[in-house]
Length: 112
Image 1 (cartoon, rainbow, N blue to C red):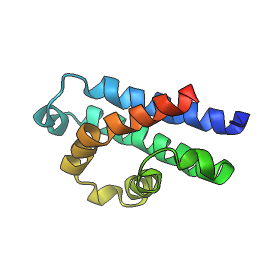
Image 2: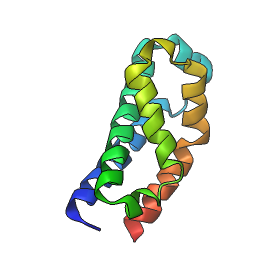
Image 3: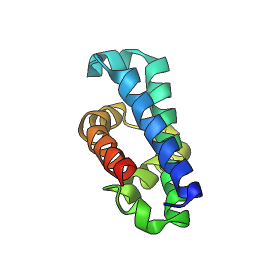
Image 4: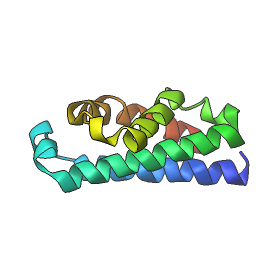
């Protein structure tokens, strides 16, 4: 893997792990009640989405090893450009359902 691609993978992994750390032991109600938590999670998804976008431009083959990489980029765009319409329950659902999958993909990628 190219050095530049490794940097983007590192950024994606760091953001994903931050989200996991922020949300560990939290519930949907905790998430909905805490604007700082919501902001932190959204910001890390923005970073991950931007890094995936740059990774896809640098090494599409590497980006394709991340399941739903296009959806992560699209989600970043929603967070950035459609911030007034972000559905907090959808964000929480992504944390619960897609974040573990993303972390698994990144671990597999790091091992290759």
